[in-house]
Image (cartoon, rainbow over all chains, first blue to last red; front, side, top):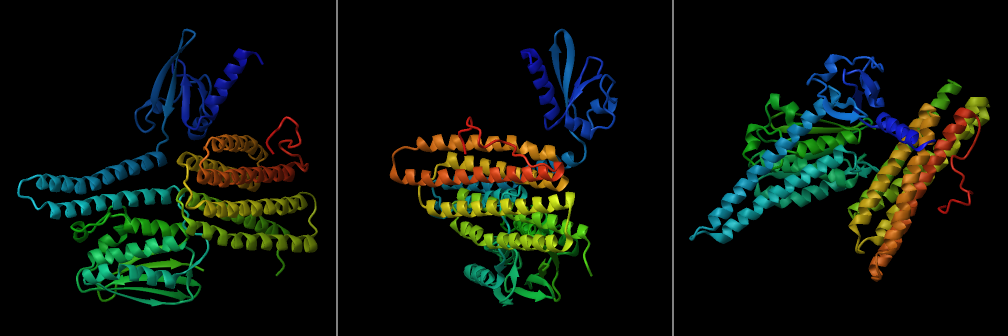
Amino acid sequence: MENHELEAERGRRLLEEIDQIVLVLDEHDRLVAASRRAHEAIDGLAHGELVAAELLQPEPWRPRRIPIELDGRRESLVYLRAPGDLAAYEELRAGFTAAVSHELRTPLARLLALLETAALPSADVQGLLEQSKAEVEQIRELIDDVLFLSELETGRAVVALTATPAAPVVRAVLEGLAERASRAGVVLSSELDETAEVPLRPRMLRVVLENLAENAIRYAGDGVDFSVTVRREDDDVVITAADSGIGVAEADLLRLFERFYRTDRARASRGTGLGLAIVKHIVTSAGGRVQASARPGGGLQIRIVFSG
Amino acid sequence: MRETLQEELDALQASLLEEGELVLRALRGSINSLRESDPELADEVIAFDDEVDALYLGLQQSIEALLARQNPVAGDLRFVLAVLHSNLHLERMADLCVTIAKLTKLAHGLPPDETLVEGFDEMASRAEEMIRVALDSFAERDVEGAESLVDLDELIDRTNRRVVSYILDLGGDTEKREWGLRMLLISRCLERIGDHAVDVGEQTAYLVTGEFREFTDASDPERVDT
């Protein structure tokens, strides 16, 4: 092949294979070339014909036009964005970014205030430093949770390998949180079927249980019980985490698993607002189901089911 | 009730694809254990191999039974043989993941080189993509898709060669050298996983065309990599 033919062929191929919706139009907006993705996304693209005017409107395709001049001809390269899925995803992502920034701002503002106070002549520097450390700790927790959630969402984190006996993990998690629970006035208990196994890596089961227990310790209130039961129901393995706290309003139950969703009561307390979103992601990635309901007799109950 | 031949063939394919999913998990697990210096995860990957082996053996036995009872011919026979071969390639891939996990454990505590670890992460992503392409094109009898594995494999091979020269430059520190030696083998494992994906692609081409041919000629004297 001659060199310039090769160049031309390469140009054509590059345009065709590019993983975006791209059109090349002449000065009258007639189609010169289009990527494969463009042909997939847009019906009725034909070479030499005018492209639908709708495609060049700001919404919903959001065209970005780059003028190119070739040998005296004025053409343009137009990038389009498929309406629908991508837009919804972008919106979600933008919303998520905004929420993370907002969540980071609060502890940062508190941290700044603490440091400014510490600079005052009669400040209790030691005490303020302690409080500052707590704020930094909260920022770190939030960042860790955000990173972890993104690892889950991109499928980089491995949620399930071999099956894990649930009982020892539950016991270890509750023991690890015993001191914090007693400080918060929460009584921990468990009722475990020793033979039950769940299709989660031990670490992931740990994360799930820690998040559920920590929520109870943070939000359920002084003097409540928190219990974890693991049992088999026919071929299913069911993990139930229930507290006897003030519970959650019916309207909030469905939204509990959304990122950064907090009930009014939880808003006052610390926590990243991502715990239950992480729980849901882990459980569903491993093929399980998770549901929040009001506990009979008051309180909140989270039920996780893995079908055998 | 006697199953129809078609139902049995469909079940073979479903098992093969499921095995592929397990291999993908083992690969991601082994690389995460390296990336996060997590020997616990490495142990889980090693234990997980039993599940891949069980699936492999089950598939092998189903094929044996099917050949004995159904006497498949022509395209059906080719399909069964292609599953038989691909089954072995997937099982080998899982074994390579176990090797990566074991090497990760051996390297634990030695000083890692972040650049190289990042490189492995990328290499593993390519290998994952290759496994997906290999399985998808098998399931869809897509020869073109299967042939595209050769180009993807070239990318992994190239990275593997770069890794070798990078490791040679790591310097004379004993611990670094020991770490580098382990990583050299991990790189090789990832490269071999890519080769097995190409082999599955060759089975797809055989299944569709009825003719077995190697996509690349390993005995070509111009090729220095093995």
